Amino acid sequence: MPSPLSRRNFVLASATAGTVLAAAPAHAGHHRTRRPFGRYGSPSARLTPGTLYVHPRGAGDFTSVQAAVIAATGTGRTLVIAPGTYRETVSVDADRTDMTWLGACDDPRDVVIVHDNAAGTPRPDGSGTYGTSGSATTTVRPDGFTARRITFANDWLRTDLPGTSGTQAVALKVQGDRSAFTHCRFLGHQDTLYADSLSPDTFARQYFAHCYAEGDVDFVFGRATAVFEHCHFRTLIRPDLAQAPYGFVFAPSTAGSNPRGYLVTRSGISSEAPDGYYKLARPWVPSSDVTARPMLTVRETRLGAGIDAVAPYTTMASGHPWQDQRFAEYRNTGPGAAVTVPENRPQLTRAQAATRTREAYLGDWRPYDRHR
View 1: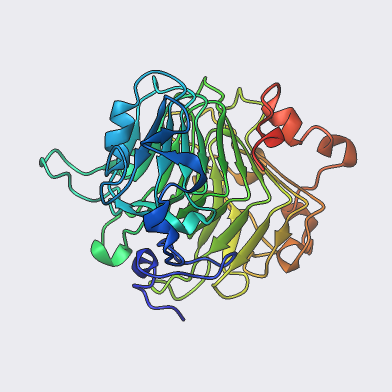
View 2: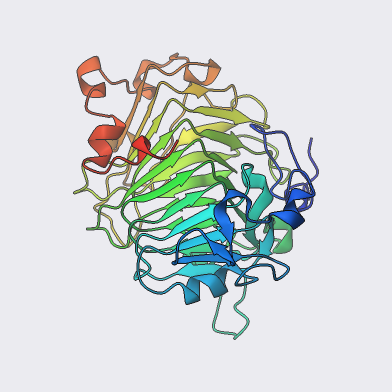
């Protein structure tokens, strides 16, 4: 069983791709000093006039991601981020539309943005605690945001605040429409990846391809219209718990007026926890939007033994049973997908599945044509 502190060590160590627990550079090489920005140019030979370069030791325009974001005013700006661990919080305002962040290496473990705030962490100015949204290491609000080959992490541990109820610790909160993440990694425990929108009546489309996300409680959550394609989700051990369930992979909070919520397709879910110790999902109906009808479709995805196949869904709040929400599956495989109690595993028909595709969810926005 991993040490309770193993998650903190992920910023100092490396791991095997596909079962990744590490967020720091996976390897060191002389190319980092000679060409720290890889194929993306340099401050003396910019990729475009609007490109800014971030390097932790001063070889770029800025040494922090937040400083580069502040300087990147206007639309269509690009940040190239050199290998390194950037311990900071980053907030991107909604007016930085069509911004792109490029990790300078092929391995997303080489570029890490990480911090350790939790919902229950006191703010330094004494104004209270951060809350879930305020805990985010990185918050992205603009439309048209793209990130490639970057790790977003929150390495706060429950042992940091024993007994607290504010254990949510977000690695990335993304709210904009047309937000695309490819070959990225999202590391944390509770509420790792917050795929959301700016308001209940804003239907933000988001696309995650070839990404990795890990956590324990509701670690992919929010109200976005989000497509997860060729992604890997991994559930973690819970040293603080002695019995199941350890947690829940998805907690969508789709607005009732939104016809499309989360779509997981051609992906996989694995676990370092005992068999059956995780639920696939539970519906989140926030107090701020009691008309929400959470929606999740998981199709053609391998569900490992960590998922409770008998009862993969559960209710989060009384008055909003999961059976009244929009949960469905289609042609999933693996031990966690076994249909032993049919009423607990709502399945799509072929005709229904034809309407639950990335094309239907994303409409005239086709990020999959260029984000491979």
